[in-house]
Length: 165
Image 1 (cartoon, rainbow, N blue to C red):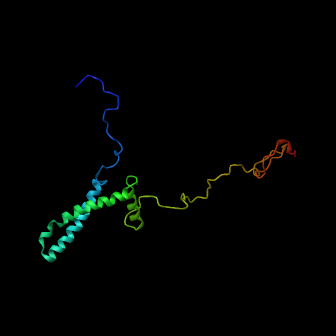
Image 2 (cartoon, helix red, strand yellow):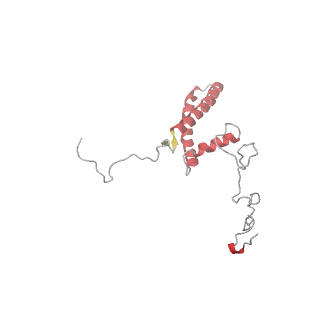
């Protein structure tokens, strides 16, 4: 190890941090989680269908068909998923899928989807609203008030226009 200090001329390699919080893409922008889900579901479907065909026809040579079909599905599925994900933020299509599933009752709603009036759910008769100007009619006025107080409905007027009571 040398005793020379590191250079600060920008030539040092630093890790890229633009993908720290998301999975890296492995095939046409598809992550390993997406690939495992698409591959697992497609293999299960193709294995079942091929098994039925083999049982009906006796063509045991079709045993590799689920593997080949799964690879093709991954390839074309990754290209379709790439079109869906283009120009969208990370996790966009998963949010759309969760929203669609909650709309049709296939899963529990994970997002607030209420449009309209929101209620606090209070049942007491206490009002939390207050006016910005005090109600002067109900305030006690001193008996010897020399100047009349304007009502809240009146506009502000100069002091010399007040009349003594």
